[in-house]
Amino acid sequence: MVSLSWLENLSSSVLSHVNIVALTVIVYYLFIFYQRRWDHANIPPGPKPWPVVGNFGGFLIPSFIHRRFGQQSDGTYRNAVVVLTEQANVYGNVYSLFVGTQLVVVLNGYEVVKDALSNHPDVFSDRPAIPAVTIMTKRKGIVFAAYGPVWRKQRRFCHTTLRNFGLGKLSLEPCILQGLADIKTELLRLNEESGGAGVDLAPLISNAVSNVICSLILGQRFHREDREFRTMLGLMVRGLEICVNSPAILINIFPLLYYLPFGVFKELRQVERDITVFLKKIIAKHRETLDPESPRDLADMYLLEMLSQQAAGEEDSSFTEDYLFYIIGDLFIAGTDTTSNSVLWILLYMVLHPDIQDKVQAEIDEVVGRHRVPSLTDKGSLPFTEATIMEVQRLTVVVPLGIPHMASETTEFRGYTIPKGTVILPNLWSVHRDPTVWDNPDSFNPARFLDDEGRLLRKECFIPFGIGRRVCMGEQLAKMELFLTVTILLQAFKFRLPEGEPPPPLHGRFGLTLAPCPFTVCVSLRK
Image 1: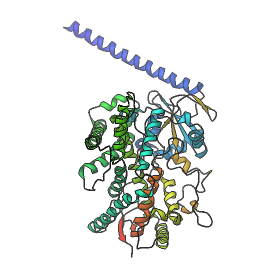
Image 2: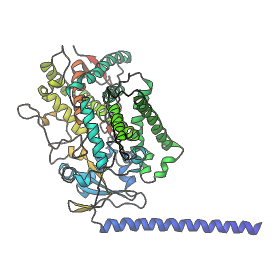
Image 3: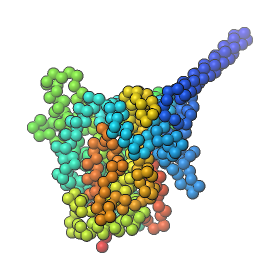
Image 4: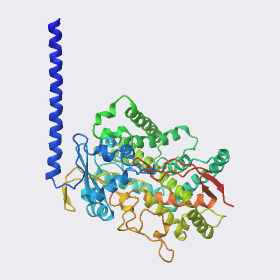
């Protein structure tokens, strides 16, 4: 027994030493991998990566950045995109990072971003297979799908169909106005109930905005008290937050972490399951009630196209219920989160700059008056209001790093070699803070979008919806919603911070989108 125990201890000791040696060899070769790629590939410069994790911990985990790099002497924080933008001052407007062994190239400034996405669209229009995103989207849909014939066909069909149902047209205005009428009624009730403590605008805005895209793709609106729908909106926000701003971001280095049975990894899988159940139930209901003679929405049109291609014997058609599921998910998220956050940012800036709020309201009073609701036909007559909306969009950029792109082939760009498969991050935040194209870029100044005669100025370096072939498909819808929401709410109400309440910080909460930090407002009817 003693001899056997000694032998077991010896074996355990040998195995332990073998593991240490193996780990050392792996780390050494990873170090050599980085060093050779770094020194000889002519890739853009950047901070030296560590083995295994690359630059991941130091630059791409927003929570880590907030704790380690972001805190200022006054206790405030710089968000992740500010830190990434500052690196351009060290390494130039085209620089590299490594996420694990994945090369990431960050593009900064208007000229560089435009050059890549507009002048080299065939190279830089693909989407990367980022593990956390791929697991959730399977690289299908409209937003996260790989670039190619299938994506072009699906996007063309969706864009044409949505336009037929009113996307970007005046015919959609009543749908938007219906949601805003509900907001006005609910705001007054909640403000009275709060007793001056303030109202959280986020749930009201999110519900109204989401119902517009729901009416287009699902043919129905959801009441603000609909528990399942409110849960769905909450899951959507939480899912994005987990993917980008929690330890679950490590899935992008170690994909198997997704299957861990605890913590945010378990929560992420549950979020995915709950969203899947909600959307697939809606698709099933559409299938059961489909009337070929009277399609109600995008889902109906898609199912009809799917049946048409099946009848024509197209066995390899990409039009499937599975693909429809990912399209609906993409449009639902993209059509809710970005626009909702833009509206919240605008209202927050109005609270923090009451003089600008007064000027916007004075313009609305002069052009529209108090006895009718603002319309999209008033848009050209409200230049200062439009300029204010644009200035807040410039400063906040709700999708500050865009949606990641990928190089579909090895190419030379700005004197550097960009290998095939490189992730490309177009830093739209840096575009909107670029001092070479904007005077005093960090200051809030709506007048920068007006000429000397007070007419609206269109600037090509203003690209909150992206640029190139992957530009946001819902840009026109978002502009309609922003204009109507801002003008209608500011025509009716005065917004201010609750008495004695400090203003919320402006660094925002960085997920896939940049949301304002939670805040409440007091609302009063304008006399």
